[in-house]
Image 1 (tube, one colour):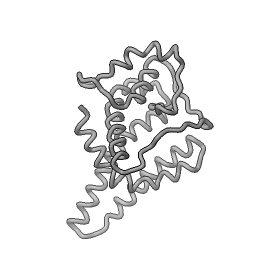
Image 2 (cartoon, one colour):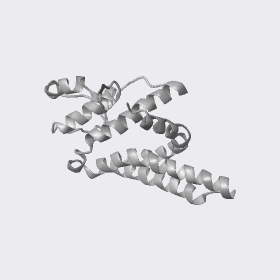
Image 3 (cartoon, helix red, strand yellow):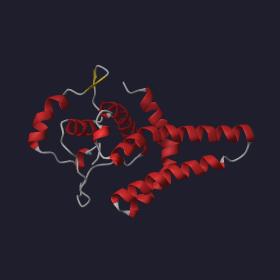
Image 4 (cartoon, helix red, strand yellow):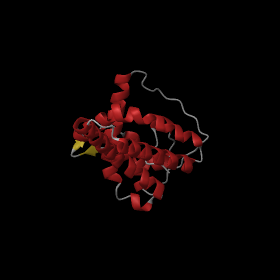
Length: 186
């Protein structure tokens, strides 16, 4: 099960969509119409209504992806806002879902905060003492490998271990975007 069925990869029963269409079209956050994260929002509405999501490992889908840095960062900003906002909407669902899914939702929200804390304390150590913060490097590497190993184990595919290569991108590009997203949710 997943908390976000990506738009170009998702299929829904028409009867399920018909039941939720009014709620889906009237998407608001803090009293304002919301125009981001519609795929995650629809997935959460489906789960709230008692439907389930299912991952199909042999499915293929085609979509357009950003091919330059600026559009990629704008996409990541939308996705980060959606993750933070829709996690608030889905908190009541978590106890009834698969434990791995709950762990993933917690990781998507607390992971960036813990990573930011690690990076900031590591930079402070370098600035104050002039020494390399090996414990910070080890913590970041450990968090990365635990998350990648859990995903690899759950999917039963070793290729998920390669996701650890995403860590430098996450630290230097996406953490600032996620911080900005959290500060500009509305």
